[in-house]
Length: 308
Image 1 (tube, rainbow, N blue to C red):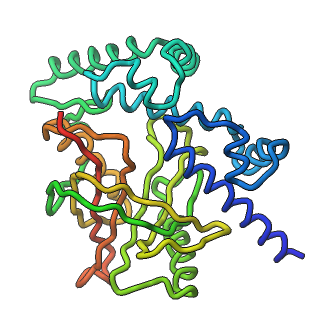
Image 2: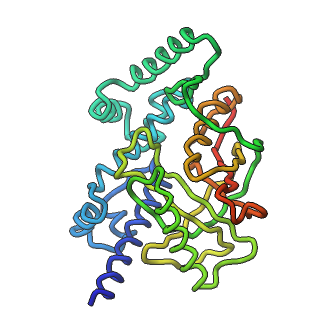
């Protein structure tokens, strides 16, 4: 009986993952309950209730939250882009509906939010002795701890299809959680004989962690695959979008990952001549070589970029 319950839950997880993947990929389009229910293969009547039960958040709230979080990121990433263009690009039908939703969530207009962050950044820049750099409304200074990469470069990459297992909830500093997710994915892909000599392993970050409540954060532990395979249960398939990325290679202990991200986002990026775009950031874990049994691991941080 317990086995059947677990199988049923995995089917539900698979359906929710497919819907979330579709929403994320098509966030700029009109998304109807009928359309999303069809993707999940649930009736329209039951779908919203099931989604809320499985995720703790209504479908409408999820879509609205993703749109606003993405819009906020874009507002700070490129101050030359118009607010109306940003509103339309994340799926709002007009600037008025965006303005209302933005004010309800953040307590101010989008233009005030953008100018407030820029003004605060300029104040902080003028008040420090050494030159500091602002990024996404934050300022890099000597008080922010970071660790430097052993290599850093910009490169274009191709689309990469991956199979994934997803976690929703807090994850920062939880090394055991990441180990469990990698082990689950490895066990599944190994049992299906999907693992190849050239398979690559990733962790994808779906949300902007400064804007998203911890219990709503999503990460996907992934492995590259060469074909479009059928997956179900808690495992899904998606594409890591190609294009230009900055890549920082680090040698990290388990408690140093945040320091590496601090360097990339708060130190390198603001002075690079690039801004981040709205593709997903991820970590790549290359073959470890002589570090395989050491407490430090080689990690490549990929951040999608576009010229200023």
